[in-house]
Length: 172
Image 1 (cartoon, rainbow, N blue to C red):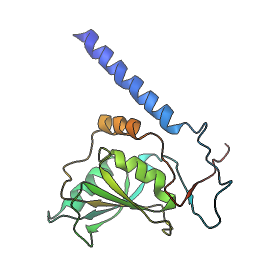
Image 2 (image 1 turned 45 degrees about the vertical axis):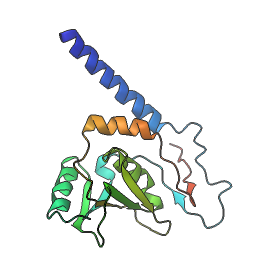
Image 3 (image 1 turned 135 degrees about the horizontal axis):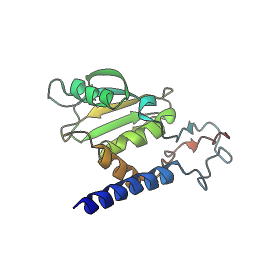
Image 4 (image 1 turned 135 degrees about the vertical axis):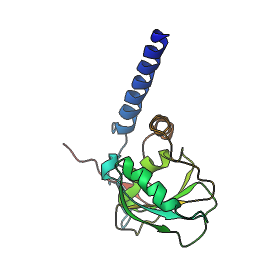
């Protein structure tokens, strides 16, 4: 029995390492602005750590207090929750992520917390790096850490939205 537990833990650790390596791999991503049409925004595809992701939580349901409780869940995971409140319109899906070019990588990470079921609403004119999370009627709960890691593996690396170009990778 102990051997199964140890082998299981080793498999989970190996999976997490592989996912992190694949997601952070910039080799061959072609992330540069050369050939980008004039006026197209540069999308920041960097995956941030939780503590560096800024979010607004909006309740798109009729359930009172949902934005506050989900905001607390995100705070407990070290995200920067800037605002909580009601969405201007009702939303039927699981979640809707609204973001601009500076929030592409953050929105990609957040999508994993909804098991890749969150819809995306990219606004190329948005200037901040905050992601608005609109909770919908189909939302039940945030994914666990293991589920987030698996979802990130399924999602792969962030991709620049249509009408934007990947931000050039900074040499370190």
